[in-house]
Length: 366
Image (cartoon, rainbow, N blue to C red; front, side, top):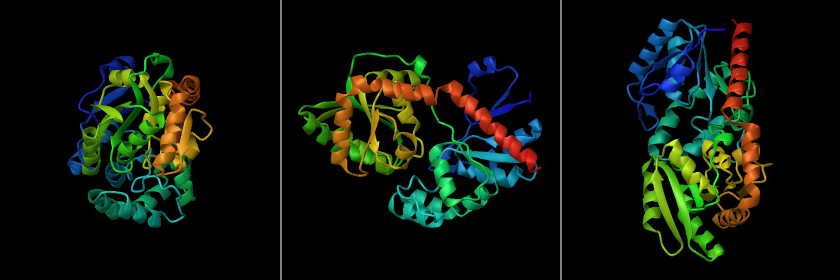
């Protein structure tokens, strides 16, 4: 029956939660970014510290993947209060397909080959802080892929928790037999998340099917590379494919588009556990992706998710065509996976177990 306060890094609070949980104290603190950097970081950390000092908690758990905040809050408050961050991804690393035992080696490969200059400079500047923070017991992996990397690079880390990250409740999804889009792609786009393969992929799929295909794309292009690739894709529509770009959409629009799509394509090598894949599966979509680590760890036994040899666009196109043609029989496998692994209730239950483990750890090591 502990007192709980939740600080949301947004402009305003959701009145639904305020009314539903009257015994929880909610606070709002807007946060802005420039690339990977938090704008006015010192001021933000100071305001968070003031709220923490006002609430006077026994433990602070940070449930957001912002390295600047993890690091600066660690410096600011870890000597005053027990503090733990929950990792949804691997900062500075992306998702190496064949991780070595050397964190430094893989970081440098990633920084030099796969990303843009502004991020390379940031990673090289800060990545050395990561092992020290992990080995202090401050960071916990909250999904199977991140746990795999933690164990690979930092075997002396203190504890793990593999929580499926599913944000859509499958029982609330709408179903329709109408298909407006053969394929769908959705991402917060940046280099490595697959937008660079789409034009070639759609052309090959069109040839295999012997007709023009329709495609829906949702999301936002966050770097110049993805912006240029997306622009070229939209300008290159032809007899092979037509694309409707919706941009960043609300949940209602997303639900409508997914429920009217045939197959979800996600040729990303960057993610550790892509929420968009689970959202697509909650609407009964089969999924085509690369045979990378987050596929092997999370989806390799799911019949409605198929993987192609990484970077082999011809292979991925054939996988996508096969899934589209079998959608009517594969949909139930996607929905069954989500029902088994997610929905807000089961995620909340797993989070409570994770919080208990964190609190028990700090109790044992006061």
